[in-house]
Amino acid sequence: MSDNRKVQPLQAVKGMNDILPPESARWEALEATMRGVLQRYGYSNVRVPIVEPTALFVRGIGEVTDIVEKEMYAFEDRADKHGQAEHLTLRPEGTAGVVRAMIEHSYLRDSPRRLYYVGPMFRREKPQKGRYRQFHQMGIEALGFAGPDVDAEVILLARTLWRELGLKEGEDVSLEINCLGQPDERAAHRAALIAYLEQHRDVLDEEAQRRMYANPLRVLDTKNPAMQAMAEGAPKLLDFLGAESLAHFNGVKALLDAVGLAYRINPRLVRGLDYYNLTVFEWVTDKLGAQGTVCAGGRYDGLVEQLGGKATPAVGFGMGLERLLLLLETLGLQSPAAAPDAYAIVPDPAELPRILPTLEALRAEGVAVQMHAGGGSFKSQFKKADASGARFALVFGGDELARGEVGLKSLRTGAEQVGRSLASVADWAAELRTA
Ligand code: ATP
Ligand code: MG
Image 1 (cartoon, protein in one colour):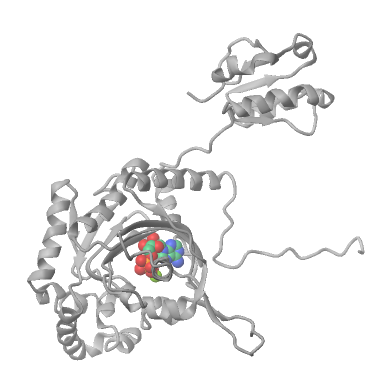
Image 2: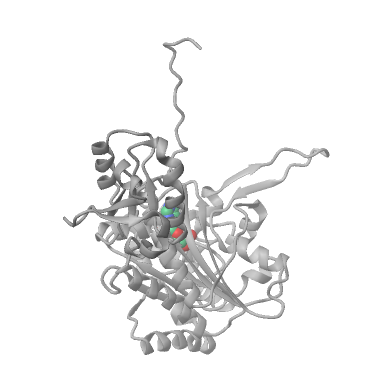
């Protein structure tokens, strides 16, 4: 290679982020908190592929949705030996894949399931703060439960997570709920709504005009300020609900009331995915500008059957992790990156055969030890020890080793260095571990 020719470095795909230390530690801390909460509510982890047949999302999410119309990363796979190429899509959301897996493996036959997933989703949107092309969701799906009790449970699971993260409900995040009823009730409302939209055609933007027959409910979910007044005055779905749907909605509200969780009924909350019925909800924040929905979900009793399974009621949510972390950061609630307990100072790398067994023994005792590597002066190693955030330096100097000891020096208090025996690590390892 010629010496002055420079290789142009490649960059990540627009809207797709690298998550590097120390930022990645915040992700791990969040995931650990989430897993603790999920476990306490009895939810089990599922891991399904990131790539699925395109038809799954078209059938599951609905043809006339933002996601399927314009946001999917859909492509044709290479042709097989018969010249057939499969249509594949990078998953834009988690529910369809989980439901597909449940049907494929007959997992809903004997008992209901409480499941969760965590992972990347892909949507070809305009990247901006809180909106990316590869983003991450934690989602839960409770399959085989028909009652309002589990609707309340999934909402409460999110509240418990907010509490563990230090978010204040009603202030940092608040709950909005609505009831979308059943398909026949929506059909009656839909007819009234289309008639209303036809009367207000002059204020509808291009997208609304295009959607008013295919998905008129979604027209009301517009972010266009010029259409707000029109949307406010539109016929409300809640007025078209029958006794059963209202009883379900009242059931959810009564349970939320019983646990003292405040909510706002938002009659225009419809969600961007087609599969919802009865309860829908969003946890929203006003601290992140336009990207204010942190967690969104609802009931989707028709989806399992729609995807070829036996009719199974279900409810769940998806939570945007980037937005949640952004919110925590905005509020100064991010947990600091975990520092090691101790940093091992290795003045003479030739002594490593004597030092390494001690480090390994400490790690086996649960102590987080970062080993200095690459030599350097005693002083520069101490600087690195300090910068690592460790509470202790382990000094493996020649004098210490000659005594069969390692020096234990606090990096956070002025305490004198003390010697500890290399032969009995288990006796003093607890001194180093985080209390
Ligand atoms: P929005 O109205 O903000 O576009 P959505 O209705 O498309 O959201 P869902 O499909 O319900 O969102 O996804 C659930 C959650 O995932 C959202 O509330 C949000 O927190 C997060 N989310 C959705 N799209 C993105 C994205 N492109 N980048 C980052 N997070 C996202
Ligand atoms: Mg969207």
